[in-house]
Length: 204
Image (tube, rainbow, N blue to C red; front, side, top):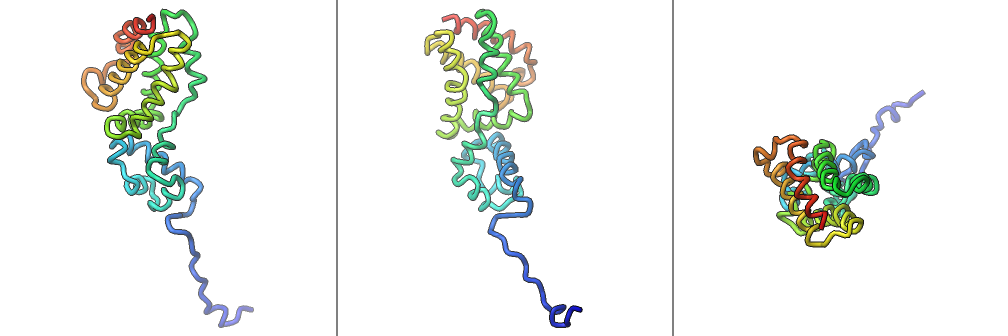
């Protein structure tokens, strides 16, 4: 039988580390999701740790716990979201004269995916305001995609730069600045418009 003394005892509240919350197992993913959205909407410079933490429903201390600095969080949130070992062979397979069209279609299809777009928009928006963003865009455009295409096709570097200028310019107008009619043009319209020029650059 429980004694009166034991009934009067009050269980002390459980203690937990600052910034942590119940269900912490999902917190890291929540922070990454919020970071992708805010970096996409505001760019690197204007997306603060506090704002990202608020959007994720966590304390800013937890963001630092998982990712350390804002730079580290940006790198994790903006990691290339697709396996280029899977998509590059699809671009390069088939006749060489069709690579320009396949490359444009691949890029537009990736950007049209709502799950991936926040990362891509965050990269390209941040590239105009921070060195972190510019470095990540260079890694995306050159290291992950165009450099590999250039090596396979033996395309001069200047030509690959021209390909990058075309693609990045269209993406900036369409998804970041949302300039009409570029923003609302169909993927087919853009492919027909861009592919011949891209192909000319790839032909060397």
